Length: 367
Image (tube, rainbow, N blue to C red; front, side, top):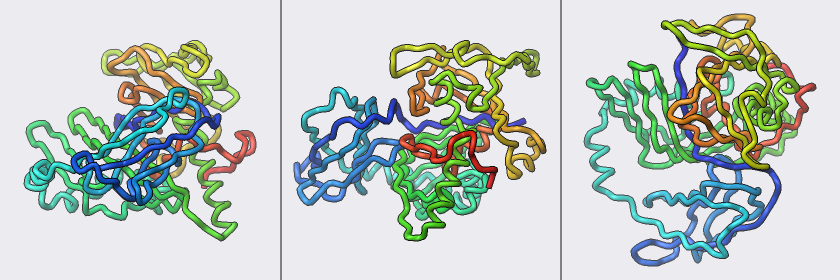
């Protein structure tokens, strides 16, 4: 039985059209003094900037749509505000509050003292993943991660008192991740993590290295949930080599209805920038563009010579809203099983302003 997987990156980013810029200032909430070198970014993108010596910032090239604007700095509580490109404030003043020391002390005093020794590998496998990309994806400050395990609930929680600094040499990204929640329920086999990632491309003067990164990014993108959601938005599932079928769970067994569903049978337009994904039971999603990679097929639940097959299920809502770049909201209302439960980890994450360089019909084979 494969694990159930749910993750949240707090994003709602519709399209790639370049729009306006956002200007503002970051100050301390109590003293009103400017905060230098605060990070300002749009969650789950590579769009961001840093405040200057006066606490001021200018964020340019904001795509049309709605975003979670994140402002963070060590020693302060992260600031989160939803913004819309069509209704940006003329000027935004961000007041950062000092982190409550008492709260941090409570976490430190009650966490498992041997937490990393007990749970470190489990955390990495479920957060970073076990794909080929995970081999060269590292958390550089893993010492900030603390663990609590509840014997009564049989639930493991992880906390990070500082942003995680992730170096993904497989895809050529440095990632800053504000971890909000990491929870694994052993009884339900349910993984849930949430946070605010910011992607920065690694620099290289080596043409071959950049080419390898581009190839790996494209290979990671094709067949991913982002790829599926973009294809669904455009009602081009078949053209993107996805097959969708209905799956019914009944009497502790799953039954697959072997009829391929068109995209417009499970999704409909809300407006010109958003569609609604709405269905009953589960959807079984097969990506026929390639066979599942060895790392997945070699798992106890994997099958050799099988395509990448995933299932999704709505929970807590009748639908999720999907926009053109592949993001969907509210992500906490969508659970994934099968291949995506295994593959959609940080080592395989791409920013939502990513565009593949290789057309789908000319994509490379698995690396």
